[in-house]
Image 1 (spheres, one colour):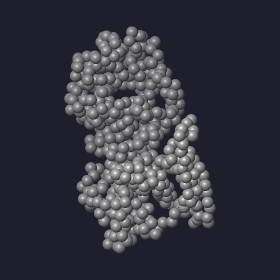
Image 2: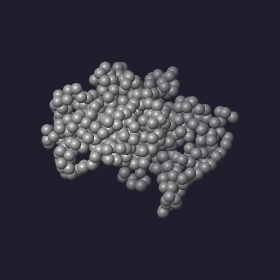
Image 3: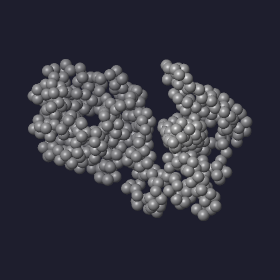
Image 4: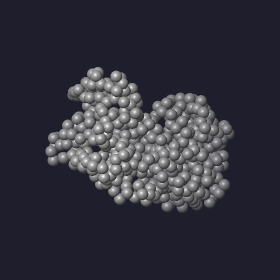
Length: 532
């Protein structure tokens, strides 16, 4: 397979996304994760921008990376300043990375109106800055900022900035679609024309996603000569984000026959993406191509029937290729065949005509009529099956719980707004504890896990990653029945559970209860009274 280099900017461009903030430890963990995936270049930040990045580059020198090369990032020298006296460039040299990414203006509008200098001075800034870094011993990639817009506005000048970069010693020219508003067809034609002008120089693409075309533009650029793709693994970044490298990598390898992960198996893509999401404290949207929970999820009866007969009927690739899994969603439209398949994972001896299967189907329809929706909470449905088949004994019994909130908040410094007290019975023992949280459900969740961790230490790794509430009968106003769906993780696996009630706290409790019980069953743990 021909080689395409991936250049990940999660730690630099990604950190500019709204709500994203990395500690130094976070950044080191992400570097290790990206290295394990086989990403060739990791842009780690601007060593002169803040003390955190300075500390990171200092500590990063001790990293033993197998596949990735760290890249420091910075701008050209300031106008009317010598490169050797520019502190930003001096910090880049001090970072001691093998590769440095230097960005400079390629759109004449930005030169005259934003950095407010002459077109000639901007060319000198590009050439002299790159030469200074190259003379210090580092390879330089030139990020031609706003290149595509600049090419449309003033083709001759945009090209001149690339020539200045090459004159300074840049090894790769990265064409940046910085505003993210250009159609992929225009990105393709401009990339092809630029590639023809510099046939022996590697060309890269750096696309943003402001019209939802970041991945499409990146793929189009590769089709027309680009050999490096920049982006962020999960697509988050400035404004609407960057090209999602998870999608780019999967497309390049499964659809176009390119090696972009240094020979590392693509099946690492989903677990590494989810690990990075966990570190960044973000959720991967379920519908994200290749790596989302719904990427290979099927609900309609005809779809499920087709996939069970031959997966290629509704799946463009085998989900295991990218480390994901097929999910057949339980619902009233799924059909008895799926019900049988789901039951078989727990009780393989039952068939579709068994009376138990039929009564379970009736129970499913009854529960969904009450407001339950198991297509997003298969874990709760597994518990329904176990309870129906009497293959279940509870791990604990609720004695009582109480939540208390106050205004103004009881502890404004910690952010706690509510307290919860939970008393449970585990086997023959009773235990009670209290916890504070940001809201009644958060407090209840903390208290429940706290009281149970003594009996089941594996719960220490569990925490909630999502919490949704939907009113099912808006006509009843505050007396309406609500459905609560929570998503939990132990850092490795993710599962969803559901609760329905007219009391939002009780609905939350039902979902929390199922979440914990599902985790303990999945871990093969026996109820505590089995150990007596």
